[in-house]
Length: 377
Image (cartoon, rainbow, N blue to C red; front, side):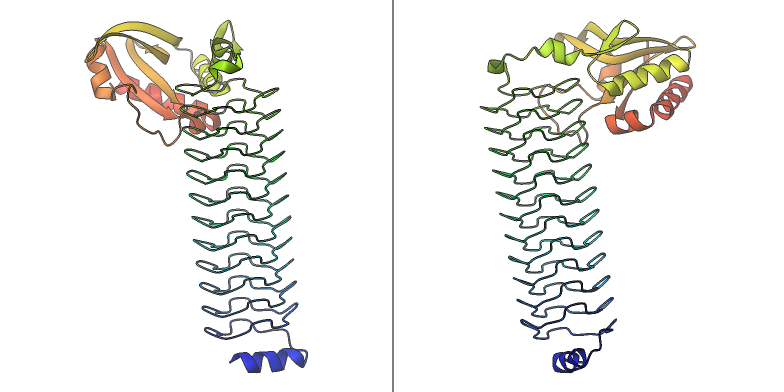
């Protein structure tokens, strides 16, 4: 089928065109409102300025297609392949793009208000100045994407991956970024007033002049993040990880209070995750010392180290560490490898590091695995 036949049949009232191959066709400014193109192939096709409101393109292949200024509002684009597609100033408001592949697509200045992008692949996508307010991006991958100046106010980005993303001057007021990966993201001058960033990973992120007034950063990982001239009044910082965080000092923040806000049976922990591990160790009826600070000989000489849990079972001693920095980034001064550390600890049988997310979701399993390893040592 070619483009002229499709348009003729559409004009006569036909709407079902599932699985057709229209690759390299010219459908510029075509009126295809409500058309059914499920599973169709439209690679390298021009649909610039076309009308596709309420269209169904589920599982269609639209890679390298030109959809600039196309109206796709309320269209079903779930599982569609839009890799390398041009969607400049397209209207995707309230469209369904869940699980869509938008790899390296160009969505500059698109209208995506209320769009469903759950689990969508937006790797290295250009969303410069796009309107994504009230958009659902849960579990979406936005690694290294360009979101400069985009509007994401009240958007849902819970557990999305924005590592290395460019979010300079992005509007994220009242957005949900709970559990989101923002490692090495650039949020300079971003607006994050009243945003939910609880349990997010902002390790080594750039937050220069960011507006975080009233934001919730409880239990977030801020290791190595730069807060130069950031606004943090009324920001919630309970249980945050602040190792090597830059330029927080002038704000009058009490680092010691933040580092030990979680109380459990008279002990104080840096995060709720560590409390969960303590509760699991308690249920296992083993002897353990939380937040054990020691002096020891290391390859660098005498130094002080602090470990999350020193545990004894059946006369054997081991160290359990909660790795709060997910996808750990090496840094000078980090702890030595397990083998190097064991050489510094006569009598310590094992040193095990567990990812913070797993410690949060499966504390009992983590402790069980650790104790089994310790028993076999």
